[in-house]
Image (cartoon, rainbow, N blue to C red):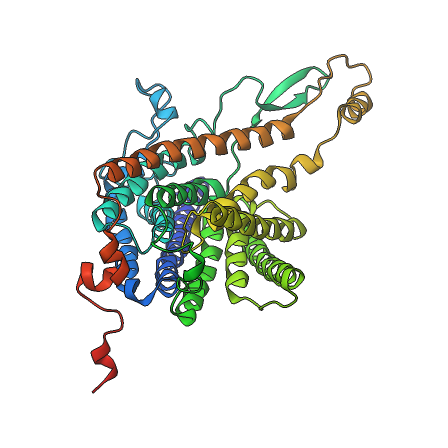
Length: 486
């Protein structure tokens, strides 16, 4: 056997081991992201009244099971079913995936198993659906929940993921003539650098996952209406959750999950590129963004109340929700922001969460888990600020006179200078893409919730809501009285 053949065999063996290690990495990340279902279950169970605990846990478990079947059957195909450019339906593929139905083939690296990638993306889909369960807690019909969970995991989220995260998606690959960074040949002649296109930037789903789930939850809460008596002054204090330890346990699960949610989005740990370093950077930025969000939220609430009434509570609620909003905001740019800007983005995500929460309460939109302010509010901050503050973002933009001076310095005899607004285009494309995601999700989720409401399938009767869904819908109590007495 020749020395050249030995090198080829060794390279193939190394590649195989790299693929196996990357699949293993993705499986570990997916496992911890799926543990976020535990986090949501505990957080939501503690945040509702005791009489609805079984119902909210049941919803979180059902999310997983329905999501698995639907995402396997059609969701993954709609999200990642890329067709070749010469395929007769390639133009439709710009909008939606068209292969891998009832399959989990890998659209990117055929030599790698598609199973690990499927599991990781399934964890994202089920998270988007679970956000909605918090927004409509304590009053949603069981049948309605099954229907809108199916739509979100099987169609609404997958289409958004296809737009943003696949090479054929129109947000990821705009195919607009001047949507490339400017460059010049050796004699100063202008051309577009085809290797640096304008793309929608959402590394780990601030918009794709969190805005999608958050705005769907907001629409659901609006159509559902507030819980009976929720905004009456005579009922103040009656709608708090029943278990702070459960809320805190759920929060800790979500903290671990967010690290892997963002870190796993690198999709690899070995091979060409600095994957290991990037994942470590993502973990650090995620920790910093959430920490800043929690502290800023806590401080803002304390200082505001102190100023308004002369005294204030030191709120665990604001500490945790601020951190959650910070983690959501940092997702879009966790791989490209500096540590300082991670602190800033996380802090602003928390502040916008508080603003959104107050706005919802002003309009008497009842979101028991503050799910839409956290996920929609934090997601909007992340998706809009990442193109500004990432290392090669708008903060690095040189105004036209500076660009022209640099052109003259490099090409003294050049006459083909053109000012490059690439960074502005990226920001504009992120704004346009986010608006498209919001319009898509509002239209489809609105149609689902409106239809269910018209058919009187959306909300439980007032009598069931009054006495709780656990006993009257499930025939099971989370805390049966008999268990307290021998």
